[in-house]
Image (cartoon, rainbow, N blue to C red; front, top):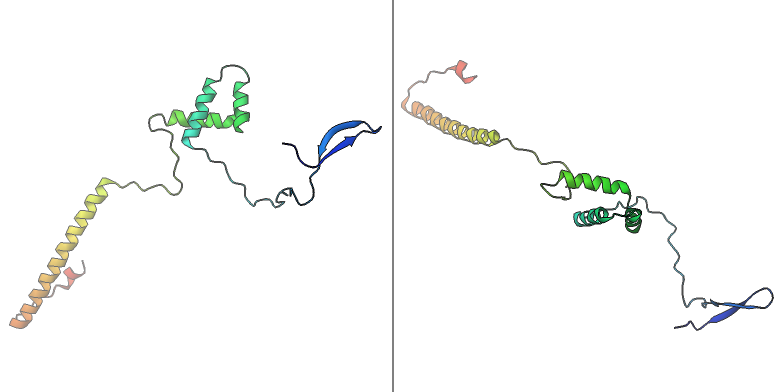
Length: 156
């Protein structure tokens, strides 16, 4: 399909040259790029599947220049391949997975759970003992029996 408005260009001596397309103003608005530069460029992120696919293709490149063509086609640096191969080798047992950002989870020692249970049991026993002591105090007051106050033991 040919555009409606065509104009033949002429050379210096009136020669008929190639056909140049002329678009009327306002019919085909030319997109003007935004001159503002983003504050921080977005970092490229690659999925594990993409990394493995590229590594397979790179390993399949046998002739000279094939690897360079692959990298240019995908817009990658050769250092990516080095890093991804190291990740693949390191994660051969666990697989290449995206690492989670943020603080690492705390490793809980199994003794901690045992000590927490022990602590809870002791707190319950102390609460029971305090209740028994209160009962003894009230009983001694009702019966008029004096209790020996051991101030030294209460400070422990």
